[in-house]
Image (cartoon, rainbow over all chains, first blue to last red; front, side, top):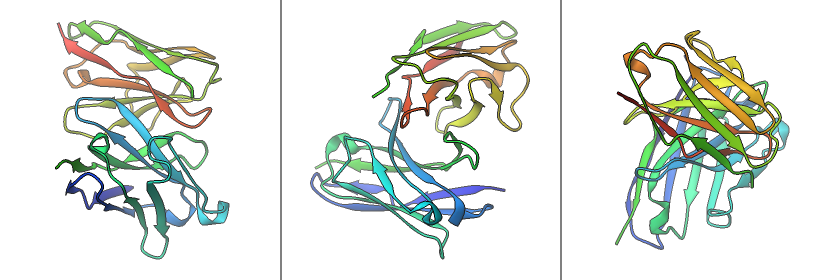
Length: 121
Length: 106
């Protein structure tokens, strides 16, 4: 069974940093493109960023609101995806989901349960 | 950025009735359109991709149609477990989501 488990959420002050992890199992992680999607309280879904597989170059892309502040990385030896969040703002408060992309197209087919990040003084 | 607009914001439907949800893209996304269902406190679940292909395990009462800029998700006979928020998402040019349609019990 494909499973994604996020961790690392918590309370952080504006301007602070936080790192999230996503442990993957049940599929060949090294071949997978992965992304982070967030959902602010009571709001809709927002794509945060994507990392390609290392065989496809391992490149990353980010949504405009987080570009330059957030960094996505991966450790294929640990089947783990990461999201490093720096210079956090109150508007970054959200549930952060880790997702996989389909092996055949660019829709997100499996989602983790999410981890909550609260940015507040 | 491609803007996705869903309507209505809230749809009140009785169990057993048909529900029709709409999604419009600000420019053509071809058939690169997915639908997700989200229940309170849960992660989104993929229902439909390629505008009309049901994901694994999704009941046949869910169907998707459309291409270009206009898309529809139809739930033919609402079951109690179908009351949720539904999001459309385009993946033709990066990834953007609609604001969601809440399907509630009438």
